[in-house]
Image 1 (cartoon, protein in one colour):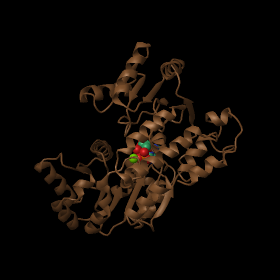
Image 2 (image 1 turned 45 degrees about the vertical axis):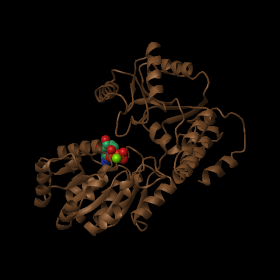
Image 3 (image 1 turned 90 degrees about the vertical axis):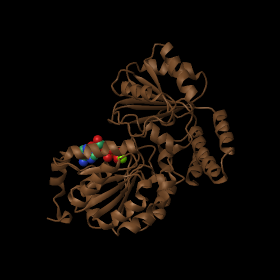
Image 4 (image 1 turned 60 degrees about the vertical axis):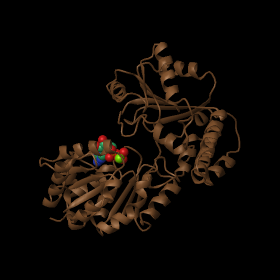
Length: 423
Ligand code: ADP
Ligand code: MG
C-alpha cells in the first residue's frame, strides 16, 4: 500500500496509540502525502510534530526535519525512536556527532530505515552532506519553528534565511512549514522566503480560552507579587524578569518571604540551572523566577500562573510566555506589571542597535504599549495581533481578562483597534 492511500487512523493508532486526530492533523497529512506544500499555524501544544512525523513514518525515503535547537531535536528523536521497534528510524545530524556516528546515520538513511532526519539549518548547508542528500530518497522537508526565518518573529535565526536555496538543490519534494507564531507579518515573511506563496494554509485559532489576562501598574510590585503567590500557595508558577540580576534578587526575596522559589537564567552554572529546572518540573519548587531563557520546549502542563515582573519586548513573546500556563486546559493566570519607564529603558537599549533592528524593535514595543494601555478585551487585542477576529462578548473566554470581567471605564476602543490593525 502506498502512503497516499494509507488508512491514516490505523497508522495513528499503530504508531502513536491515539484514536483520533487533533484539529486539522488528518487533512494536513493527507494533503502532504498528496504532494502539496503546506503551511501550518497552530499554537504551542496543538500537535504540530505529528503532522510530519506520521507521514514520514509511512512514506518511502527520509523526511528532513529542520529544527533550530539541538535539545529539542534530541527529545523528538528519542520520542520517535520509542514509537518503533526498529532502530535508526529517527536520527539527528549535527556537529556534535563524531565520524563513526555520522557514518551510522548515513548508512541508515541509505538503507531506507531512517524515516526522519532532524538537522539544524547550518548542517544542511555543508557541502559533503549536500552531495549525499542529492543521492538518497527524500520524502519531504519539514521546517519546524518556521518563524525563525522572520526578523518579525520572536526568535530570528539568520541560518533559516537560506533554506529555500538548499532545499531546491537537494530535491523537488513537498515542503511543510510549521509555526506557533501567527502574526500576519511573520506569516507573509515565511511564505515568501520559502517560496510557498501557493501552499495550502492551515491555521488554527490562537485563542487560549482558559487563560486570564491582567495588567497592573508597577507599584509596590514586590509586595503585590508576594501577595498573589501566597494566595495561590502550592500552585506552580513562573515569574519572568528582564535581567539576570533581577532574577536572582527576586528569587531571594520570594524565598525570604517563605515562598518555595528558584532562579533560572542562562548565566547560572549549567548544573544549577538544570537542577532548578528539574526541581520545578518535579514540583519540589513551586515558583521559578526566570529570564526568557526559561521555557522553550518545556512542557509542564499544570503551570497555574505566569507573572511578568518586567513587560515583554513584544506581544508575540508575551503570548508565547503566557502560553506556558494552563497547558492542561485548567486555570492559567497571566499577570503583567506595566511601567512606561520600563518601556523607555527598552527604547534606549534599542537606540544602540542597527537601524532595521531598531525599527522593528520599536514597532513591536508600540504594540506592547497598546496592549498594556488598552481598555478593550485583552484577548481580542492579542487575537487581532494574530490576524484573528474575536467576539469580546460571546467569544470563548470572553470574560477572562481584567477589562472584560470588570470594565474600568467606558471608552471608545476604536482608536485602540485601529492601532492594532496598522501593524
Ligand atoms: P506543538 O509542536 O504544536 O507545540 P506537539 O507536537 O509537541 O505540539 O504536541 C503536543 C502534545 O499533543 C504532545 O504531547 C502530543 O503527544 C499530543 N498530541 C498530538 N497529536 C495528538 C492526537 N492526535 N491525540 C492526542 N494527543 C496528541
Ligand atoms: Mg513543536
